[in-house]
Length: 291
Image 1 (cartoon, rainbow, N blue to C red):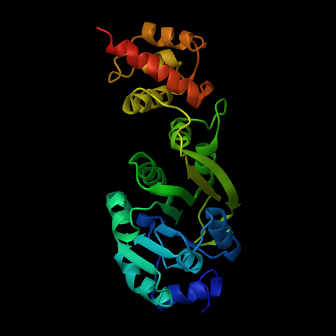
Image 2: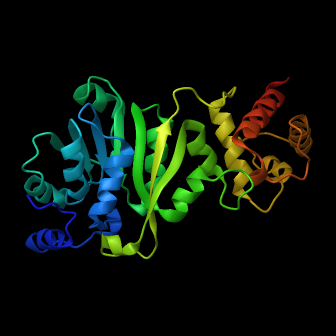
Image 3: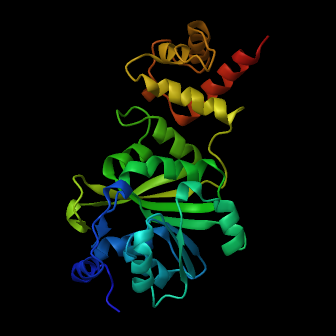
């Protein structure tokens, strides 16, 4: 069978089914076999694994995953691609396509139904327009996910792995690093896709922590603090936090909390590490719970 990583084979399938990449689904078909192999290799896929693939498209990456994994469950939102996938995956009895929106899928129930409740390894070439909601769903909901290896816009991948002190460091960096250890595997140029996107892409692997790097008093409150800290990047933390009415924090409370963690009252959010945000959140949580 000719792999779809071959550009000529991909074009053949696109022409056969009169396909046009759907902008509303962020479709770009990967045609670089080296990148496809890098994705599977970096994800550490073995025959013991069940892979949850998001957005298989015409089945390009799915073929490579099915070769390496014990089982692949591919979730595709575009029903027009179902007959294509039936064709391109016809030789793989270990690949199953689920026509659904991943944001509406109960991943825990899917794991119990298809994988004896064991964690999935998630692999995907993600649509750029919905990258963050998908990743945060996988991380936040306590879904049975061991690792997430995905192709995303390069600047988004950079933000996910940035540390404090960088201009790119922000709420997404902290959210991802709260749950997982992110590592950019490779950068992928536009020429690796049909049609070519207007920006570079990158493959990033997020390995879920077995033991969380920080523990906070109230997770919801912690993320509210982080969001408020970066919602007005040019403002100091004191102003950003006190301007957020949901938190109920005064300027004095914010300033006192910053001093308690060894920071000044003029500090901005990008200077604080994940650990410092956890400490700040716990102190502020205590302040807001006092009578």
